[in-house]
Length: 133
Image (cartoon, rainbow, N blue to C red):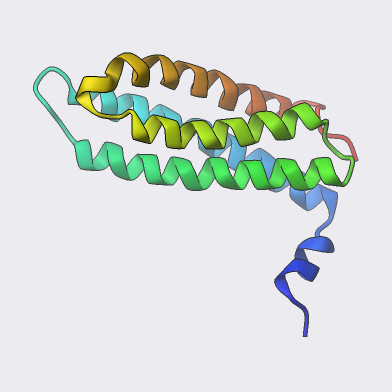
């Protein structure tokens, strides 16, 4: 019987690269969804539940991106900065959730810009020739 850890240990770098690319793209798409739903919140209010649900999806997708980037780095198939940036993006999604109230938008909105730049950077790198086998 194989364990989950053993299964992850035998995952090929090509599979991890595909997982990284897919999760990185979906993270950016999820961020775009967050921007759309955030824009609908003002001035008349809007789908706060939809925006909050999108934040959960963003946590999951950015977490998967971070895991794939770290596993690739550990196999010497990705530079350390890419793994660190993916982990920072993942952590920032929780900072964003913590500062998502109407009275902390002065932190939340600029944080969204930083988060988007980081996620886009990981995505562009993963889609380019950044990962090596």
